[in-house]
Length: 303
Length: 253
Image 1 (cartoon, rainbow over the protein chains, first blue to last red):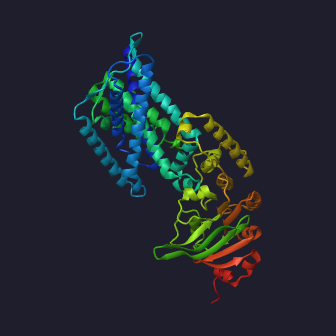
Image 2 (cartoon, chains in turn cyan, red):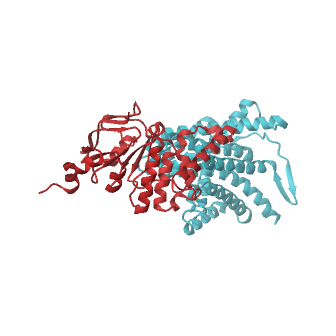
Image 3 (cartoon, chains in turn orange, blue):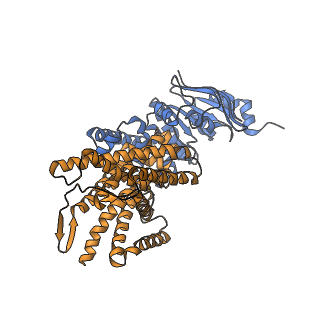
C-alpha cells in the first residue's frame, strides 16, 4: 500500500507537467481547431530558456531564502514570456495565413514547425542531454513510508495555481470572453468589435507560456533535458487533452493528472516498458465509449 | 444629418453583381427598412456596411468617417451593431456573457489587468455587469440571465441578440429579418422594442419580409431588386409604386 501511495505522489507530479502542456494543446484546438504539433517543442524550449536565464543569473547550485523566491520568479516568468512570444511567432508565421485553408495544410505546417524547433534546439544545445542545475533545496517529507519531495509539491502547486488563474481569466474577464466568443463564432465575434487576430495570438501566448512553465518544472524535476524531449511529452500531453475532452480546460487538467498516474502505476506494478501501451489502451477505451473525451460533452468550457 | 451614406456601392461575386451602384442614405434617429425579393442583395448590403465584404466599387461613410474597406471589428467599435437572419448567438455562453461580449469594444482591461485581477479590472467588470443586467431587463430577459443562449426559446434568442448588439452602444443598429419565425404577439413586442430602441437615440435599419411590420414601423423604405434600388420613399409611396408591385408580383404577361 505504501508503494501505491508513493506512486500516487509521483504520478501526480508527472501529471502536473502533462496537465500544463495539455492546456496549451486544448486552448489552441478550442479556438482554431488545430493540433499544434510544435507545442511539445515549445515546452522543451521552456526548459532551455530557463537554463539560459539561470546561467545569466549566475545560479548553478542550491539557493536559499528570499533569493530563492527571486530566482524562481525571474526564471519562471522569463521562461513563460519567452515561450509565449515563441508561440505568437509560430502562429503568425505558420498558421495565420492558413486559417481558411483546408485543415490539412496547417496540420502539415505544424509538423514542420516542430521539426524546425527541434533542429534549432539541436543546433543550440547539441544532441546530448543537458544537465539542469538543482537550484531548489529539496527537503523530503516522510509520511509513514511515503516520501514527498519539495519539488513534487511545487510541481502540483504551480499546475493548480496556473489552472485557477487561467480558469478565472477565461470565464470572468473581457479578454477571456473574447476568446470564448472567437472559439464559438468568429464572424459574430468580429461584429462585437473583437479583433480575432489579436485574440488568437493571445491564445497562443497564454498556451505557450504555460508550456514554458512546464518546461521549467520539468528541468527542475528531472535535472536534465535534451532537444527531443518535447516529442514524447508532447504526445502524452496531447493524449491527455483528448482523454479529457479536447477544447475543454478542466478536461486537459484531468487528463494530464490521469495520464501521469497511469504511467506511474504501470511502471510500478507492471513494467516500465508497458507504460505507453497501458496509457494508450486507456485512451482507446475511453474514446470508444466517450468519443468526445471524459469532460468533452460540456462544450460550454470550450475556449 | 446623414448617419450612413453609401455612394455607388457595388459588390460582385465572380460574374454575379449582387449589389449594383447603390446610393443610399440613412438619417440619424430614424427607423428605415430595406425590402426586396429573395436574392435582391439586402443581406449583401448589410455585409458591406459591417465590413464582412469589401465593396468592389463605391464608398461607404459612417458619421462622417469613410469606413470603406475597414476591418469588421473596427467598424463595430465605431458604432455599428447588427443581428443575424439566422441567429448567431454564442450558444455555449450565458445570456449575460453574450451581452458582456457585446460590450467588448467599450471595455479596456488589458492582459495584465485580466490575469492579476487588478482593482481597475474588477471595477470595470462590475460596472459592465450592472449595465449588462440593465440591458437584459430592457430587452425583457431579466429572468434568463444565467441561461445558456442555446437553451432559450426562439423569440427570446432574437431579443437577446438585439440586447447583445445594443450592449456595444451603437449609433446604428442593423436588424436582419428580426421578425422571422415570430408569432403575432412576439411581433407586437418586437415593434414596441424597436421603437424603444429608437427612443434611446439609436438609428435602426432593418431588412424584413413581413410587409405589415415594415409598413407599420418604418419612416423610409428602400426597395432592392436584382441588386439595384428600384424605389425609395415613405411606406405609402413605396406601397403604390408600380415598380415595386412588379418586382413582388411579376410583370403582367
